Every structure is written in structure tokens, then in C-alpha cells.
Image 1 (cartoon, rainbow, N blue to C red):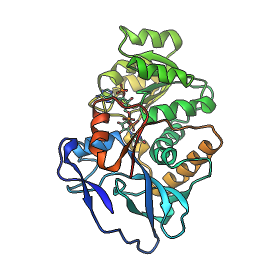
Image 2 (image 1 turned 90 degrees about the vertical axis):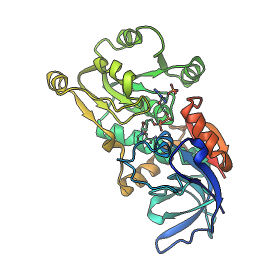
Image 3 (image 1 turned 180 degrees about the vertical axis):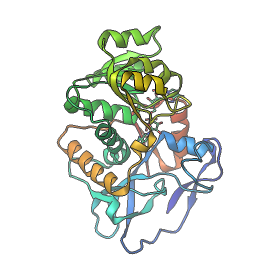
Image 4 (image 1 turned 90 degrees about the horizontal axis):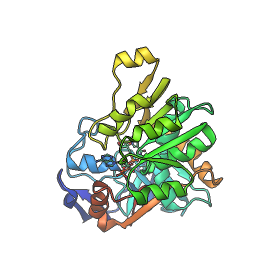
Length: 312
Ligand SMILES: NC(=O)c1ccc[n+]([C@@H]2O[C@H](COP(=O)([O-])OP(=O)(O)OC[C@H]3O[C@@H](n4cnc5c(N)ncnc54)[C@H](OP(=O)(O)O)[C@@H]3O)[C@@H](O)[C@H]2O)c1
């Protein structure tokens, strides 16, 4: 079988397709014939050698943790989380208790994207106790997680404002029925204030950096902020004085790092929502396995929209 290996930390060109023997499942494991593997922004960061504090990987390694495909032997359609990596491959071994059977209504691509985006979005909504009273602000609404989070607000929040840039991406988010503020417009925070005069009760920050910092004053008194996003260069932070004075709360990346049991439960719930038509992961682009370097480059060049997949 083929798999994509990170030869050494560096630019996308360090991703290379190598031949390897089929992995052999041990007790409690299942061999999956991969039909779609999710490609995450964070996997591009790790490949660059960034984030080694959180991901103690040594090259060479095979990235990819969200896969959907056929269980070898039974032909059952499944989706699951591989644990540490190995997903950018024709075949991968997955713990049986990290696999969920796919409902007929959900395709392999949507399922692979749900493994991360739907589980993280649900986990953040749970931790921040988002409810029908809350006005939500989503920073970085064009990404996979952003687009799923927007959709979850339809049933779980009072209103949502999406922050994005790039006319074509903004038009696509608006076509999904969401109100978008363009963060490249001068004084964009005023446009948010017009919509949310008392501020946002919940901010889901998929970006951090300068954009996240500009949004901090938009958090309402008593508001909750998820600072799990870092493509802008750093996680957002709010100083203690503001948190205390305004009764606000911040959760960090740990709110999105899920133990296997909880992740598997949330994958199943995400699939059920998708099967009922309540959640439609937006798969913006797919690449063949041998073009994994192009997939990483596209994410880094910010030409992508929604989820990115590799299709062996
Ligand atoms: N996906 C998950 O399940 C998950 C789990 C835990 C944590 N996270 C974190 O959440 C964040 C978003 O993840 P994702 O999977 O949704 O990624 P994604 O689909 O690649 O989306 C990335 C978002 O960040 C923006 N962005 C990209 N590069 C940027 C830059 N250089 N400066 C400013 N904004 C930039 C993109 O907006 P443009 O359209 O403007 O480029 C897009 O909205 C990441 O930090 C990720 O590590 C995600």
C-alpha cells in the first residue's frame, strides 16, 4: 500500500509517497481501507516543525488522524480517529472502539471531515454551555471548524455573526445563510457592534493572533471565549483584569483535546446530525493521496474553503 510520509520537518515538499506493507491489526484493532482522510491546518504546522510542544513527533512519520473507509474483511462503512497519525494512506489500523459505523446518508468525505470538525465544535459548545440566549461570534468562519460551528448555532444559539475575508469565501458563507462581517474592511469591529450592541456572549476563535486581539473588546460582560485557534500566529488571550472586571471566561486548546471515548461519542452524534440533515460538513477541496504536498500548500496559501481531504 501507499502512505504519505513527512521525510523531515520542512515545507510541503517534504511530504512523499512511500510504499509500505499493509499494517496488521492486533487484538481490538481493525484494518480500514481508506476512502477519505481529513487534512488539518494543524498538520501543516506540525510538518513545518511548529507546535512540537503539543505534538512530540519525530520525522519520519505519517500524518492524518481522521479517516473514513471500508473495514477490511467485513466491508462495513466506518469512520474513526486513528490516534496518533497514519491516516494519509491507502490503509490504516484503527482501534475498534474509535470506529463508528456510517449511516447510509453520510458519504466518506463528509464523515472524514466530521471526525475533527464536528467533534471539536460540539465539545466547545458543551464546555462553553452555549444556549438559545447566546449571541455567538465565529472568528475564521471560512475554515472547516468555523463552518460546522456556524451550523451548530442554528439550533443551539440565539444568533451568530461570522468573521471572514476574501469576497468569494464571504459569498459562499452568505449562501449558506449566515451574516458575515469582512475583517478586511476598515473598522470591521464597528460592523460587529452594530449587530451585537451588548457584545458577543460566546466567541469561537479559530484564528488568534492580531485578528483575535482585535475581537477581544467585542466579548460581552459575562461572555465566554474559546481560544483554540492559532493560524494567526498565536492563541488569543484576555488579561486577568478584564476577565475579573467583566466576569468573562476563557477556555484554551485543552477544551478541544478530547479523550477517545468522548470523541467517539461526539463522532456518532455528529454523524446522526449529518444523517438528519442538520449538519453538512463543507468539503471544499479534495486531492489524490500523491498530491498531499499540494493539499498542504493550498492550506498554507489560504486558498482553501472548508474541509480539505485526501482521497487515496
Ligand atoms: N478542526 C478541528 O477539529 C480543530 C481541533 C482543535 C483545534 N483546532 C484549531 O482551530 C483552528 C482552525 O482549525 P480548522 O481545522 O478549522 O482550520 P482551517 O479549516 O484551515 O481554517 C483555518 C481558519 O484560519 C484562517 N487562517 C488561515 N491562515 C491564517 C493566517 N495566516 N492568518 C489569519 N487567519 C488565517 C482561515 O481563514 P482564511 O479563509 O482567511 O484563510 C480559516 O478561517 C486551528 O488553529 C486549529 O488548530 C481545530
